[in-house]
Image (tube, rainbow, N blue to C red; front, top):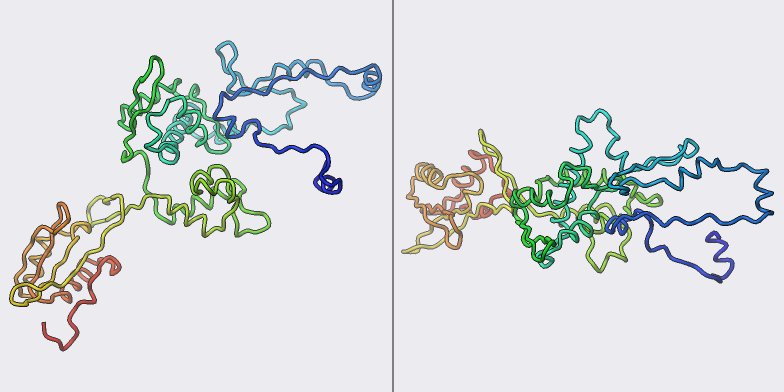
Length: 384
């Protein structure tokens, strides 16, 4: 009955709640078996007499439907694709097959596309779902509980369609690339015992604007924008796994755009890129430390200017010291920076923040936001 009829009847009778459906994420993490075949109901003589005057189903169609198999099911060691009679041609095309064949002009073969999907699900599972506390992790559990759930909507992960054919062969390749370490902890059972969490293939570098574009396009492509309120986005299982905390999994169903984008950015590891003229860009993880300018007192109450973190911006401390010595007509020294490994600091006699600021801002064209301490420069009319 409809919702209105159900409410009118006072919610009397038996009801049910759908917890699991065919081909959902839970189905993907299992053995992907097909629903059981149910024998057709036996018709009595009255039903048979009425059926004679109605449209009857062709016997060949009944045979085809009883022997119809889903893509991915194995029968006698072979993989068959679902086939239907012409009368069922209006049914929606299988999304996993369409996802791989939608671009007929694509030069990549189905095998190459499946290889890419396999690696994508593998890296996504390591980055978003597997924690250090989960190790050692059975390879079968890793595939069924983690990799399958990371498969994009509309795609179906099938290792037998890849060039690897078997999970063990694929994991051996990943072990050769030193991403993971696999061992046979018990006879015939392999487990992932170690993961290189800092391996460069575990992540790629994206700018904030690129992340925003990817999230917005994903939400629109998968029809997640709320129909009643365009400022809200419905969360599908993939977004839930990526941005929600465990205690929010069953309570938060929608998020405003700004909250969704902010959470996505917060889940990403920060990184920065430094581009120097004539050199390849330098990309490093973490947040870049600003150039730090401070004033300090030395013997005889003399002031000195100290500058740190020049190396992070591709500047040689010794070259900076030589330029400042000539420009300020003051002595300079270069020493190891206290508390910083493999880092140097430049010390200039007197308050030279004004000259140092000119060098960094005008000569080296560094953004002001990456320099702290410029406000310590001498005001006009004051002595050093």
